[in-house]
Image (tube, rainbow, N blue to C red; front, side, top):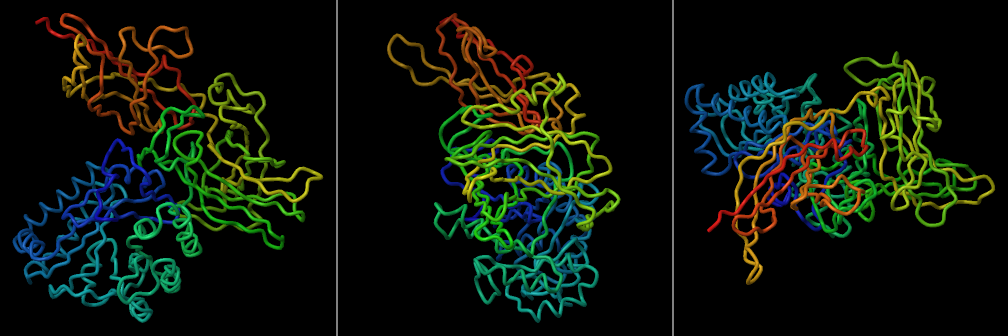
Length: 613
């Protein structure tokens, strides 16, 4: 999109108005970060957001024009040591940056020697990637043919099959017609799903569909059983009004929904506050922390199924979900649900998540929500379950209606003492008008399948329109809440740089700026992220809520690994012979979403002094 490497390149986020955000992850299997740099490494934020949704991420290796041809000759026209060295480096990059593989895009002609080695290069790269990267994947783009000519085929055929046979998948060019799809059927054989039929969302050239007619492309692709490769779905952001971006993005993907299988959540705990990884302010559990635009793709949490659902056989009954930056419980956004309950029915429900999770002996559920405006509507969570015996390992089987049941969980009334942090606010009115409801479910031999939110009219009320904002949903294995939370260990500071800022005026010492890197030890599987704070006073950080005295911590930002880079932090100015102090605190944010008391955060304090002149 727009050349690539824009605001998404900043690993720790940026202050950006109206950035691009992709949030329909449930409908895709692979995300390719594409640019016209020879080696395109997916920015960390995209990789984190995709992996959180179970989606593979590929970088791009592309050669183009005269320079691209020269590069290809340099590593492909010689012996195997050259192309294996390039493949080894591509595997190393994927391992180090923790993405899943490569799209190989050769858009220049090749000599006979180079094109002869290309299948060997692909096979070696694919084999090495499978060995060293879980779920590793190599795709080939339809460009060069086996003679070495740059000649797009718009299909898999005998001129390019040798490349398909040497890697995991084939991405066709975009100017195909249905006869191309028909011709590919026999050639692809059992690997129909490994042929990704290219669709240019910009609709450039002689293509089927594109733009808001992309569903026409998907209809034909699905008719013949192939996979689809949607190129540049950022069209909705680049070419349409930015103020209407969310509506246009939802419209684009809703038109494709019937052709796209839905990803399921397959493990617990499942926790989401619907944050898009962006916002106009930052909120922590109902408490506003910072005002101003921010963009941090790594902070994006699991997104629901967006769309509009209309009741069958009931006049005007509907429910529609939207992402919304206007308010948030945690992060920068929430899920807005609008709907109408007609007189003919007592309730409407919207399916938000698909799950395929074997039920542990006991689970707890939590929902944070608030109704907006005058509305006499009840709000509750619902689950559907199926028998574990109806499923098989290695795939997801469709369950019959007879094996699926829908439950309204019972409220959790007396939680065990060790769960106090998690359930401390259940049933209470929280900050900002939010309400939290908690539930427990005990089921055996079942599979969690779907999670709904149900809206019901109270007896005697007429047709109801409602607006509900969801701030958070959790599904948690109760057993996990009985285990002690590990502490942040061994916080250290390295790569220090001190810089003198401009003087504040005569008689005042010049200010100081500190840049450094924090490191700490913690098992990442236990947390959603870390919140990094600092105190720049002489008395250290307060534990919060106490009498006036020590300084309250200032939030610096979020970290998604065990380190954080601080740049040009203003610290207290000191005079010659004086000492200053700065303290850093690392707050773990557990997957279960409760706040960890400050006494259990990791800490590192630094003393600094100005030499006497």
